[in-house]
Image 1 (cartoon, rainbow, N blue to C red):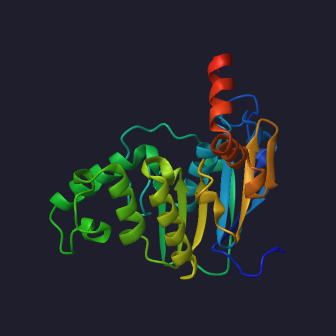
Image 2 (cartoon, rainbow, N blue to C red):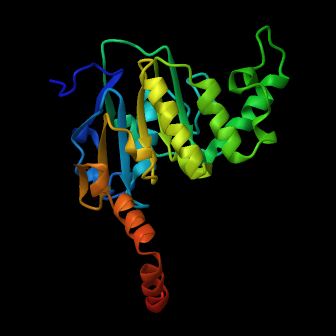
Length: 254
């Protein structure tokens, strides 16, 4: 039974543990995967957080690919592949779908966003009876904008609502001010019956109130509130005690 008041497009996932060949090799040797049974998603916003190396991007990628998105990002209509480096975890993931299908969807992956922009330009050079794809992204070449501008152009112009949006570290090229604007955009799209699954290091982006936060650790996964995350506590401590923390960092060499 779903613990939330509304039914999301993607209620959760299950790992088919009986089919996993071994838990001794990547990606199944990651702590989060070794302990994974099922994972329930919030109908509005689910956060996947934790230190580097915990398997956030691997888990996000498996969810996106199992749903039908391209491993390097984009909509379900994108099929480009510059380098096939994604794991086969998606083959062992079972999706628990909601009663309704989304009208829109996007897998945003910061590390391969350049490849997505390049493929859009390639497709727009081919003969087509429809409007240029770039029109859906604001009409200006994504390569002719800064990373932050092009990221935000996608969030503003391409995300239309009633969608499932899977975002892997969307804050990568966004200033703090843009991150707050992104939070407002998330709220706008949630009001239009959208669902988000977001991997992030940003305490600003983690602040959406109607959400759940899953923190990944070497031992597995735990739920927590924003103020309990290392991201929030370390940032708060640094800003409140900058000189003291700098002295400790420089004196210790760490």
